[in-house]
Structures are given as structure tokens and as C-alpha cells.
Image 1 (spheres, helix red, strand yellow):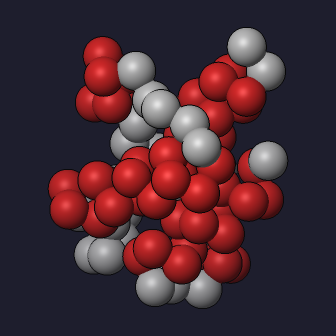
Image 2 (tube, helix red, strand yellow):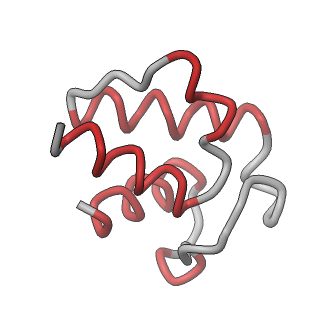
Length: 76
């Protein structure tokens, strides 16, 4: 699932997949601003048929936090 999430993030931000590392966070690259973050979350929800809990959305600001949340939701 990690690879799929990283592929979605790269596609949404229109950057090379090689830029998407676990420690990459919003604001680290110009493409990942607040609008980009919303687009990432929305696309992941649509493509993976998930719904992130509203109270967790503000914590989803790094690749690792998004991957962890997706893994938690898909294995719950």
C-alpha cells in the first residue's frame, strides 16, 4: 500500500516519484501546499475507497503520516 500512496502523491503533485520519500512533508516542495494537501487526501480517499476521520486530517502533513493512516484504515 505504501507504494500506491506514494504514486498517488507524486501524480497529484505532478512530481517525480523519486521525490516522494517517507520524510517528505507539506511545505518541503512548492507543489505541496495546503491546496496540494487537500488534493492528495481527496484523491487517496477516492482511489482507495477510504474516508479519513475528520479529526485526523490536520495531522496528515507528511508522506509517512499519510501512509500510516492508510495502513491503519485498511487493516482496521
